[in-house]
Length: 244
Image (cartoon, rainbow, N blue to C red):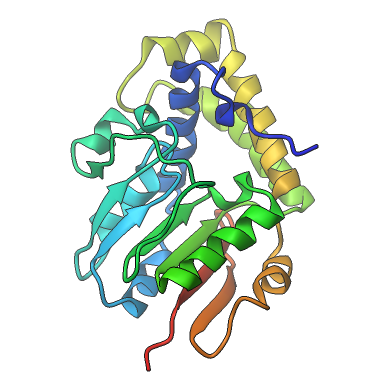
């Protein structure tokens, strides 16, 4: 049986989902976890990107604000109402829900997934990259979790230590976030549970290389990089058509 994170279930309260995704996205930006993605954008000629599984939208917004030359993102998600109100002031949002299991990439388009790839089964991950290849589309996948003890420790610290220390600082300010963090700390539990489950579902760089090896060929390149960082390692998958 394939377990899904609480935030992936339609019955999970929308406000809890939004606050959870905002915390995860906000803290990733504060730690600059996705900074190594910036130079990788230069491998692509188009300056327009579509972010899939955007969640809060904070990672894509960080990349858009710091990329040189400038790029433009369009955000999309199965639950688009989860995109942070702060992010929506600066980044275009596709308002209709987008189910990645039914998604068809468009030729020549460029896509990103920030910490969303592990939400899918191995078969679904292969299918998504295969769709990119068939459509001659490019994509960058970035994952911050690995199936190691260190990731469990990082998730636990984020949920039970960092979250209480920063809940008041996350913008937009939310009374509900304060209540569910300090008074009835359900947010601590749901963030920890989803984080632990995400670690169990994550893959190492070598596992991703083995998984995607047979999809790459002379017309479509797939590179898997593990980038070491003090604030948290990053696994990046760069997949794109090879120019003739």
